[in-house]
Length: 160
Image (cartoon, rainbow, N blue to C red; front, side, top):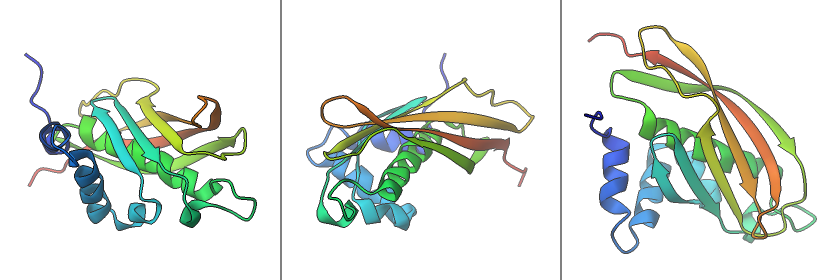
């Protein structure tokens, strides 16, 4: 029998079926981690091991040449990776990002979609582990504009 979903995944499963539920879930994530509100991205799908986030191109996230700013894209990548980790990590463990490597492949002139997945499935055992999360960011034509790898440190929670 699979383990029950953690709180984040259970909340997603409840809210995403409602009208405006994805928007509400995304706002709740931004309430928990306020910096993510600066890009007003929206979680489109979420399951253990995978998260898709959408970013609408608007003035607040553009640069001087009219494309989506590189730091807004990095923010989006971290939002996708972090939300996926939160939905995938059992209550017995915790996670925190340790570092990020980013490849800027093309200009980002349109709305964007970031997809985060584990490069290797984590082992939620007693030993802490550095787990790479791959994030691909694509434009509306499906062209990958950014690839990122976010290293996540996953460790057991300390006993209370």
